[in-house]
Image (cartoon, rainbow, N blue to C red; front, side, top):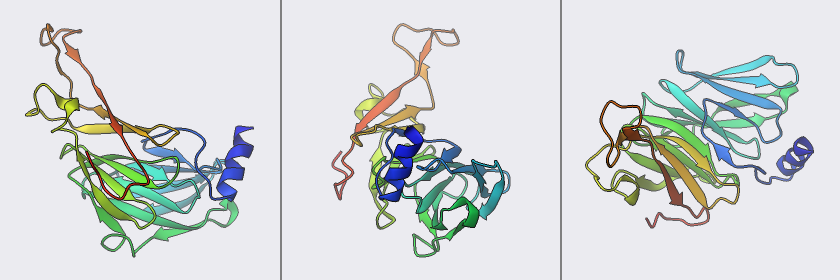
Length: 224
């Protein structure tokens, strides 16, 4: 079954066996824990899926909007929109009955990795090697090496083919998704603009856009 496959992969330190997307709520690879951000009190909650019981509340940065987990149940990453950073949480014990986790103070600045402005969404690659952060206020995607919790670089989606024909417009990346084979990252543009031949303020005058980015989770740099 899917659950058995996920449990086997988690136990062996493998990858998620499904594509991943950004969300204010995330489920662990073994389907035993649910994590949910709480923007109102700057925390993230952890619940058991077998009993639906809250087992932890962990303080993070300002206005957390999205959470992502690594496939080995070792780390949780929280995008904090108002503090322009990602909180790295080390999961010491992922067993629901003996759960233990705390902010990894060795990551970034006292447990918080600086990103771009207004990091709204976050996602890990299914192989667990990369963390991608959508900086809605800066039109960039921050790429983090999950092994070392270090920023590799930033992808400028505003100044890219995805924003043609007018790169002076804002992009405001929000939603993120990574394919199961770890080769494509999809990014939604929050703002929609009047399309060719469209009329402003009409139902069909505007169009949304999803940008597809080729990725290589084994590369140590960003080539484009």
